[in-house]
Image (cartoon, rainbow, N blue to C red; front, top):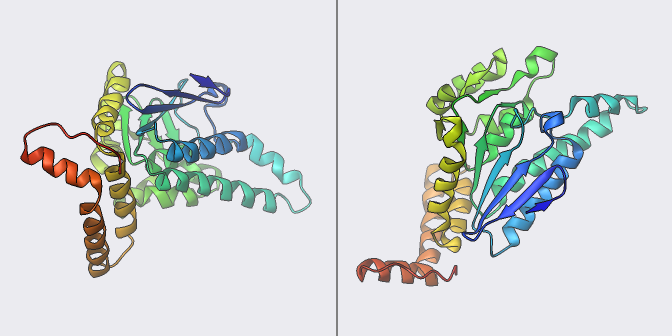
Length: 266
């Protein structure tokens, strides 16, 4: 296990990289240092051929409490009232969230405690999410006069408009079971079963071809921004290229021959 204090990294023999937020004293807030550590970790995971799946977890009672408001407030001391600093932090946060989406490796959030504001955004930016049934989610910015505009981007791409607006406009807590119902997370499980549930999902995914997973993840996010006809044209081209890949030939051959495929990840 590699420890850089606020973000722990642990890569197992199955190619599952566990990234653990480790700033419990600040409720794993997305400080500048945390954002930088996450962005670097996802960039490196995408490039590392040993990594097949990423699990994002957290130590402490909170998964992530969003931006570090004390750090943000200190930025107001600048001559411009913090405008340039706030813009820099928002850009860092947006880049980190997009790094998760753009990472070719599937990312699973393993959520304990609360995930609020940008912490909820962090969960929504992951490809999959498993949470303890005691976890709670919220976008509470309206309580302090600061609408959760950037969390809204990820949230509205996970749940329906009415559900997203309810969370954004009321700022109320959404229990894990309700989060599962509206599609913010994949499933809620008892806390004692959380890590195993996330790791079981990760192991299933890690057993697949890395090339195929990367192809599918990239295509999924690309096509959903397109009109229907364009999406089908794009996806058809992706499938043609995928069919020509070595792992598709191997996988289809293994299926027809009733044997386990031997992936080359290409």
